[in-house]
Length: 253
Image (tube, rainbow, N blue to C red):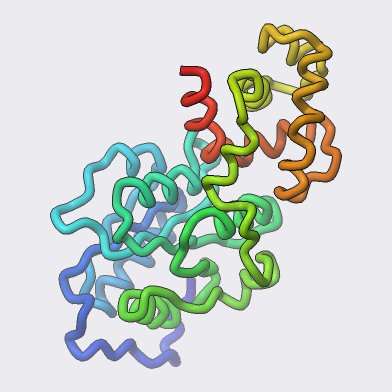
């Protein structure tokens, strides 16, 4: 983040953000504090900084809630991640404007697309954005409800959201308890699973595991997976755990 002095200050005329609250959830503590203090100075907001995704989810919102949440995607030291946060906000605080705030590195590109297509977002912003620009964009989002995607991030996202990749569409991947057992095993298994490994983990026969994979191929194509191996399905399952886990629990409970 740059605080380039050549950038004009944000003119809010004592404006609509004074006293409002923003949540910033990012495990890069130094950057987060710098961004928070800048936004507080420029916009008159109160910024609550959370360095741990699980801690944020466990925290009750302040009176009146957060007007906007800036959410990073990757939390390598945590069992939960940015997708968990976005879905938590969607359920518990639907009025909060959700903004993905990411470096946009290649290793989060697929997860970024998952989030963009399945979760209503106000926009996606890059951490490389100059902070004066960030303040102006946040002001625009609060005033209008959305803003254009950061040009740095735009190439990583599809031109249009797929109608088949809403959060609700993941239910089509778990049509019964047998599917739920397979996905749970794929998420939990360490290393590359064989059909026999999955058979032992699920209590299903090897042929049943094969049949379940075949049953799911049509739905998996809608998620960009063409005849995936079990290893590819495992990668997808772990990446999309936030969507799949509640559905798995529902089927198995």
